[in-house]
Image 1 (spheres, rainbow, N blue to C red):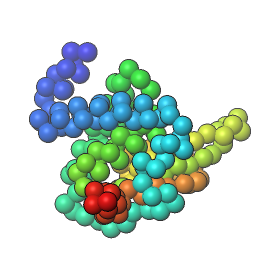
Image 2 (tube, rainbow, N blue to C red):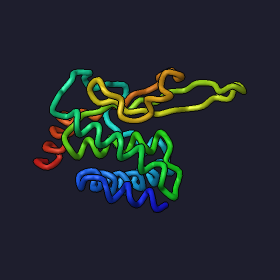
Image 3 (cartoon, one colour):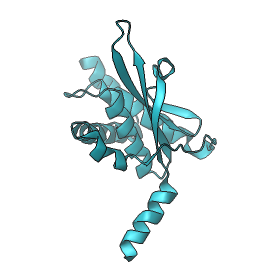
Image 4 (cartoon, rainbow, N blue to C red):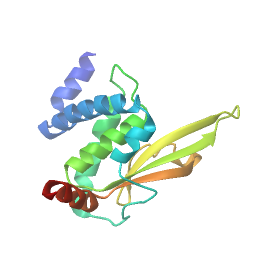
Amino acid sequence: MLRKIKNLLAMNNRMKLYLLEALLYLGWARILKARQFAKVAPTLGIEREETSHEHHETTERTLGYVSRSVRTMAKHTPWESKCMVMAMAAMKMLERRGIESTLYLGTAKDHTGKMIAHAWLRSGPYYITGYEEMNKFITVNTFANKLSVRGEASKMRQTS
C-alpha cells in the first residue's frame, strides 16, 4: 500500500488529473452499464460505423494518458470495471478532448462453449482499451463517436 502511495505521489500532475477523471468516468460508465443497453447505445455514437484509422501525431500523448489512466484506475475501483465500462469511460474522456473513437463489441465462445462478450476502443490506428483480448472475438457491432456529426446535431438542436 505504501509503495502505491509513493508511486502516485511520484506521478506528474497531468497523470494524477487523468487518473481522477478516469475514476469519475468509470463510475459513470458503470451506472450506464446497469441500464438497458438499448437506452445506452445511442449515447455511444453512430451504430455500425467506424471512425478513421488515420494517424494524428498531435493526439498520441493524450491517447497514451487516457489508456494508462483508465486501465490503471479500473483495477482499483470498488465496483466492477471490466471491458465495456473501460471502453465507455475512455470514449468519454477522448470525446471531452475532441478526439474521435470507435467502440467495438465482439462475441466468442469460451473453453466450455459458453457465449462471452468483449468490448474495446480504438482511436485512429491505436487501441486504447481491451486490445489484449480483442483478437479472440468476432466483431458484432461498432459505435463511431464522430465528433463533427455530434457537433452538427447539437447545433441543430440549439437553433430549433
